[in-house]
Amino acid sequence: MSKEASATESICLERAKTIARVCYDKRVDDIRILDLRGSCPYADFFVVGTGRNAPQIRGVLKDIQKEMALQKYNLINEAGRGSDEWALIDYGDIITHIFSKEAREYYQLEELWADAPEIEFEVEKTDA
Image (cartoon, rainbow, N blue to C red; front, side, top):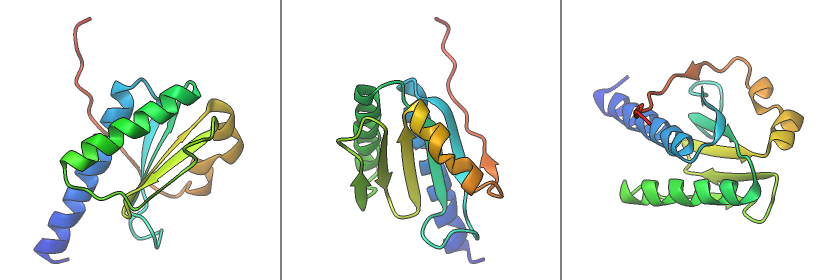
């Protein structure tokens, strides 16, 4: 792997972790980063989380988009914006899925990608 490709992968991984941290800050539950590099032809990472209600799902996607815009990371597509069950934002190499609890249990996305390693991410702990 070239240094340029390695640097691009590192940036992509850090962006996936940033998206996961935005989800955490917005109190999204059960956040997972799945590493799809080498096993998925259209994305390197999935960030998956469970929203508590439709306004929270919409709000977290809006905040992710704001954060990624600050990083000059272009949104490719979004889906499910009007849904109470699921929404997706696609940055090409990172796709974020935020589900309701019921939809996440129904679709079992992690089961579809059971061979994908899970990436750990750090969150800042505050004394509250």
